[in-house]
Each structure stands twice: as C-alpha cells, then as structure tokens.
Image (tube, rainbow, N blue to C red; front, side):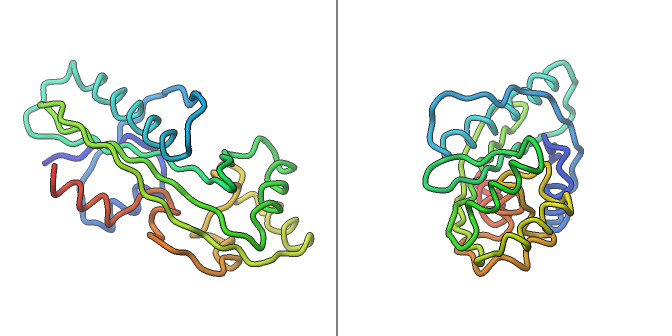
Length: 190
C-alpha cells in the first residue's frame, strides 16, 4: 500500500514516520470556510475536502499500486466555540488567556481515501485538555516565543506549551494533529 499524506504539517509527518508508514506528501489548497457546524462536523468536512482535492489531483496519474490518501484537520474549541489559528500575537494572547485554568477540547477529523476504488472513511477524535492557571506574565512570555503563531488555539502541546498542560484525557497525538491509534485502526479496516 502506498500512503499519501495530504498535509505539509511537520507534526503529522513525524506521527506517520513513528507509525512506520512510508508515505509521500501531496498538498492541495482548499477553502477552510465552513457553514455553522459543530467542531466535530467542521474537522470532518475539512479533512474530506483535503482528501478529495488530492484524489482529484491523482485522477490524472496512472496508479500502479493501491494507494491511500490520509488527510486531517485539527481545531481547538472551548465552550463549543472554535479557536482557530490566531491572526496576530494579540489574538494569541486572548486565546491562551481564555483556556488558562480550564478544560478545552481538541478535535481532529481524518479522511482516508483508498485508490483506485475511491473508498472513503471519515472519522474524528476528541481529546480534553486541561491547562494550568497561568499568570499574565506567563501568557505574554509564551506568546512572545511565536511558537503558537500558526497553531489552532495558539499553542503547541509538543513544544514549550507542554509545560503548561495539567493533564489531558484522550490521545496525545490527536492534540499534536493526527490521532495515531484511531488512524491505525481505520487503516486496518480500510
């Protein structure tokens, strides 16, 4: 089986490599706009779009072996409200201030498309994350590192922000960007 990762995310690449999968990366641009949906529906819809865009790109290629596209989308939500990628450091500060001392959820939607049959499987994983209470100074210091600039929820659990996580309930890899255990189970079924 040939695997195609529909993402340029270094974190997703690391997870697939750790899982022992050989893959190539093929990224396509898709609109991340969405209608009024729940966080679970949003991540599944966006992962479907990403996977289908790559499947469409591969349509013109002569596939000589079975292939599986792996696409994912991750977002952070608190009280049912989505916290996307921050537009600037001020927004990063606001996001971190909102989640400090509280529980929030990280959702990752994954779509697998097996080619050439075009057999698709979409699922999501949710992880509850508890952030320690942080002072204004701690938030400012973290935001100034720039680590969370392009991350959903303005933080990276696998980076410096990991020291501010009190605990989590669910799959750590899901918070990083790809739920390895669930992914393996779905790949086995597909």
